[in-house]
Image 1 (cartoon, rainbow, N blue to C red):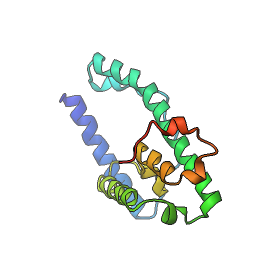
Image 2 (image 1 turned 60 degrees about the horizontal axis):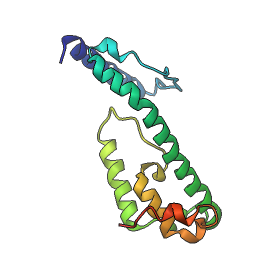
Image 3 (image 1 turned 90 degrees about the horizontal axis):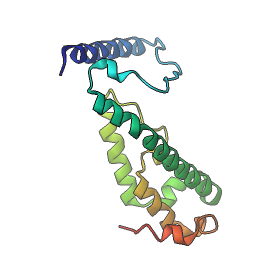
Length: 155
């Protein structure tokens, strides 16, 4: 690791610690932020090949992120309207709930990881979303063609 990268990481850790101390004292330090569309990571010392590959993958990540969260929104809206606000308790299997809780706990131990979501379905992985739809098929069959759902299998 280059000395510039080490210094960058060390400075970030110090800044994070300082912000955490201010926050603990009740001082608001994290308002809404808007990140730039691209970050100049090439200035940190990564190879041009890695920077190019990351740039190429960013559109794939954005598309998958949108798809995954659109499915989460569909599930949430449909199950709230059909099952009520306690749909998570009544419509989600114990297996999926356990997986979600494990992921939440794992991510909460890393203080540098931004919280994924404020709702439990935000921690549900894509394959589990398909399982959730299939398990509650009566609530979804009018809006999703069966041929689409046949591509997923329950595990």
